Image (cartoon, rainbow, N blue to C red; front, side):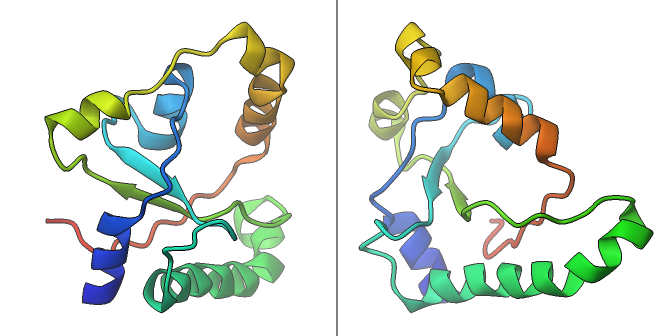
Length: 131
């Protein structure tokens, strides 16, 4: 747990969610930084990978029973997200979300987000620290 917390706090890959999408990911008034766990997360070592693997295993266990129990069919999962508070004011200012732009729309960012909204049914969170 302690190693996963240290990894999460030192994760260098953070995404700048579009301002219009923040409530869909972080809830109302969500204000923190988000890192996406993927193959490019070079600073990711074993601890966060293990936490992410636990969620994948749980998804695999739930998938067969979700149609009957929840009325939905699991079609997979998205990449893991690490949600951590900003270290300080400077980091909060530097990582402020951008507004959705015409370039984003042309690049399919809006379309991808709308597909996410339409398909999401179940959100699993694994808290490793909630100080």
